[in-house]
Length: 453
Image (cartoon, rainbow, N blue to C red; front, top):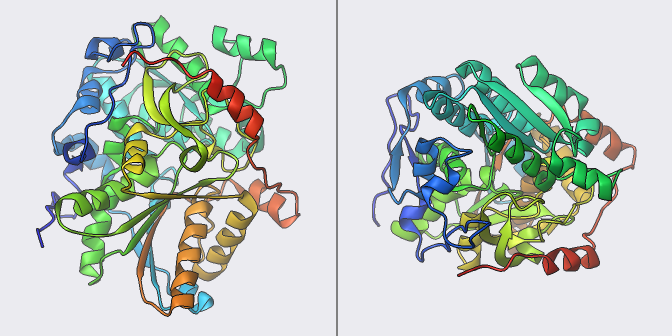
């Protein structure tokens, strides 16, 4: 079997990010300029991204070096711990070995800092003075606020309104780290005002918040936009997770049979899964890869694989991805980080080619799994991570039913210490299991843009 190549320093910190684009079995469909409908060129992105990130977005290089200054920040919490969930195994009475990679040890409590530090660094090097972004549940906004402060850059965050109201402590974290938070949709942008005119009580969505952030970034030369998921360079930065996990599992004398991650836009899932998919494609491995998404926003399992905008207003490039339609507004579930209408093009492409599986769960069964995990392992997971835990528990119970031992690895993308309202609502029986509305999705899909290729 071909040896997997590791690029780590003496502290077992990755020195390079892994670029799945180098090993794609078929080329991805190119992103398109929203005006011309032609494949984008780097200059099309220069108004909102620094050149270094644009280069990473389109790079075909397998290993991209992590700047030393970014590595120094990573060393504050990386390598993140890998644990075997022995108490959970015992509670389930399963022959499976269950491992989890815990990203909640980062200063902000989630995986998002892996790319926030990198994006803030490249923007600072390009002379940018302000970054504007969106956030769903608030993990990304929190991470970018801290990264911006670390790099001396102001950060403005458009936070999806339902999460802005549901998660005041997450909002407080963003402000404590120096970020400015605005509930989206807002009256501060033309995109936001248009939504409010149509739907004054709109709960907001990531697609709406992205429109507002991109609009602001386009208006000022000293301001860029940063995205916490979906794009190739974001997936790239998160691969430190899976690279570390492969080496840590090797030190434990095991290799994962099943790798699982929750999936909204795709960043924490890709961070864990892409190095394993790379090993499947290039080193003869055969790990099953499972993405778990919310039943109320099931882009992979129910969406169309088509060109669509990443935002409601149609300001972003058109990307071929699994989508429920850019006008789709998901129900107000507590896993706000998974409330995105589309899936990362790279994840979508690999799913389309059959290199990963997907499963959708309603939120109550995910919280049941999260509480079972918390009582066994002592960590209260983020609502998003509960989806991965649900998938891991079901895989372990399948092993029990079949009498087979398998090694299951999932990404615990963050802790839920500032998401306790969600657990209070679950314990009080207030969580509602929303299935997405077929008619709303059908209407949204009618508005998919016509691609020029």
